Image (cartoon, rainbow, N blue to C red; front, side, top):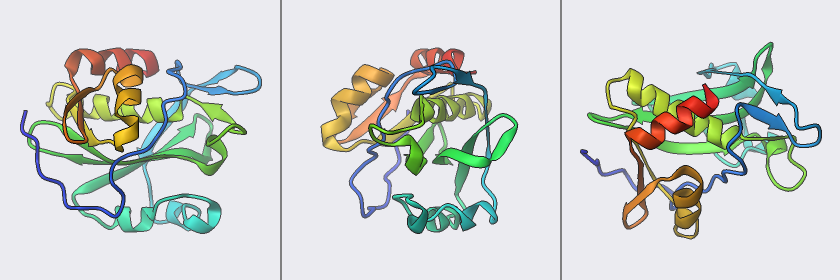
Length: 178
């Protein structure tokens, strides 16, 4: 698999947490599952996706990169509330995850839904298959989360902070979420 060099970023790797691999997203209190939709964000979405609203990353800046595609996760029939975001770039033979972030209300001990990040990663795998890349997805992980991604996503650590999700694992994630 071709692994491209990625421009240096202010942060040193992804730091999303896979809290649980669910069949969709799951309400923490009730355990109820909710079907989700994943669609491209729009300029209007950017009005509510900002640091003032509790988002950690500058998604407007991410949206402005023409080579990247930014997607939002919402609950079916509730498109107004964004549960999480992912920024992807389709490379020659895989999909690269630049950023993954749960909505502010889906972080920490008081989160509303679990399974958001897993759902977004499964979508990246699905997109990789759709674009003819056999489900292969790569990303840069924060050093302290490499073992977490190895355990939770079955991602393979291939050196430095680079990790990949291969076809067989991608299929498992897709089957779980979609």
